[in-house]
Image (cartoon, rainbow, N blue to C red; front, side, top):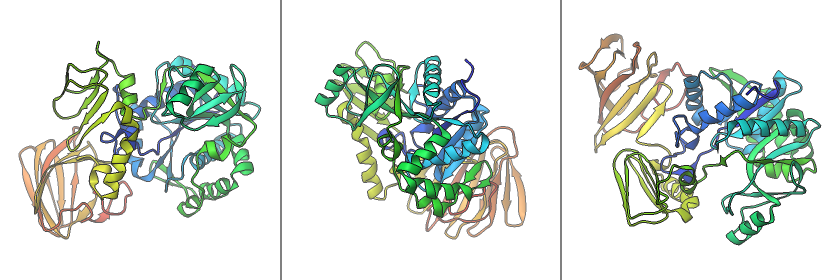
Length: 474
């Protein structure tokens, strides 16, 4: 199917933290980058359907911490587009403002179709038809959202009340209801789930911000005017953007304007906002159980298991979700799954790393995974992508041993440079300036053994980095 309008720019908001899908989703590797019931990540599937429904250049808005993950997932698809970095989180209204300004920079008649990076949609052709309907409704300046036709009472979503059947002006927005109210909404036939997806003329959205949220428009205008290019990314002025009010597009504009419309949406939508929602979209057995990974069910019904590293078995359970990773296990009733974010917040408040990272940590050059950690030693498995290299750096508190197990490495250590192949190793003394480079065409795999008085990731002094990073990460 051909995109609907060449001036319709897909805008993907990819800045979420995804705490409701902890422990698979962490703040530095949130759910939009995960492959859930698909060979592609949620972000990649969103990019696919955006290219089907929209004709303009892709615009992704993400935060600083996820920039390399976003760029890498785009490269895996051979997808081109512009990545705008939010220097701080300011919710959806400011993020969409930056994207609207960027689209207008390329086409004065630009439409923008705003999508969330972490939704699933089953029927892509029907989705494209809905986008076309929304564009037609937005031609005269209407601010259009998609209202998902509900198939059940749902307390995890906000609702939209339409004035009439079909494409309609919006009567009201409603917050997440209790179970009784949700049933009343669905039974009435007047309400839709609030999808958080929109179609606007870019200028119409900015005009609405001028009327209803000038404290968003003004700082975002200044921030975008001060934007600079950095590798694959567009960096806006941090000080100006930080001055913007942190507010959603619904609160800033949609609930205030009398020009909002809703397009009924029925294309198999889910926001994957909880493990219960993941269970709902999964392929189920005769007892209603769904799973990913190595899982077994005995005398269990309506359960979900996600097993990342080992066998997980459920015996005599009902309506339970179990999610296993190498460092954490979550067990929750499906009814309470919406509150998983409370555990992530408790971990963050306690300063525990399980809220932010997996044992496997992704970097623009590849990844590393902690295998063993002791009082004065740490063992890691390091993977470096072909053609990639780590920063030139040194450590004040630890020495390192590197053993190559697959591929080829070029190692810089002070004024020496050596090449290592499989089963060869080298020693990097404390304080030595060093770098690791993969010149080959296959991933470089090595084992790193650290020893010293302090083994934290912030014990890094960086001298040079091809990815333009600063701070204390490899």
